[in-house]
Each structure stands twice: as C-alpha cells, then as structure tokens.
Length: 153
Image (cartoon, one colour):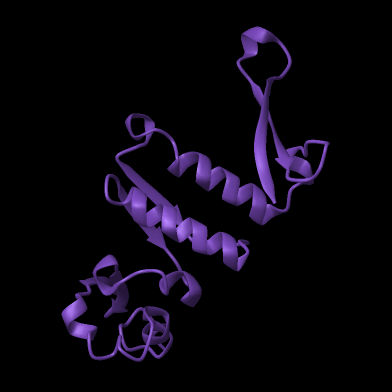
C-alpha cells in the first residue's frame, strides 16, 4: 500500500525542518504524520533509522520493543531488516513478543533473568536447542519458559 515519501522544506528555509508526507499507492493525496496510525508512524521511524546508508548509521542501535503497534506483516519486514543490518551493525532489541522472537535463532538471544535480586545474562546457542527447534519455534520455547526470561513468581 506504500508508494513513496514526499519531502518538502517546512517554514523558514534557515530552520532546516523537513515535512515528511506519505504517498499511498492508488491514492492522489499525500498523508501527514498525524493521519498515520501509531504503528505506521513507528515503522517509518524504525525504517528511516535502520535503512540509512551504512556510513550514517550508528555502530550500535538499541531498540526497546520495536514490535509494539506493528501489523504482523510489518513485523516480518522489520525482523528481516534487523537481521540484514545486524551483519554490519550491533543491534540490541528488547522484546516480550513471541511473534518477534520467532524471527530469530538461539544465537541471536541473550536471556535476562532475575535471581537473588540481580540480573543474570545467558547467551543461547543453537546446539542447546537443536532438538527442540525441530518441532518448536523460539517463541514457543520462550512461551513455555524453556529458555528462561520468564517472570519470577
């Protein structure tokens, strides 16, 4: 449904502000940011950050629950972008989403647990879970509390 962005200077030329509008496929009028859903606006912001030319991207990118408000199809695209960009940049994501977790392999996870009032960190390996991954996704394993990261009751 997305066709293109429409960029134009906003206000005083010395102000260096740019107005971003969204051009919808099969629609003549551009949409302003206030006409977009929260999920669409969030996806655009994430895409702008992650799809910058390599020399302009930060070396380390930290994303707190990037899946919030996204349509499942947008989540698929975002996870794919993150996987590609992570070949060059360090990407750190926090999530509580089973669906988002399903897009990644054990080696992509560092599980944070709370034990004795302290945070503990464990990097997963594919070898640990290879027998489980034949029948279950990473999200399934997390949801069943087989990889940790669950609440401490």
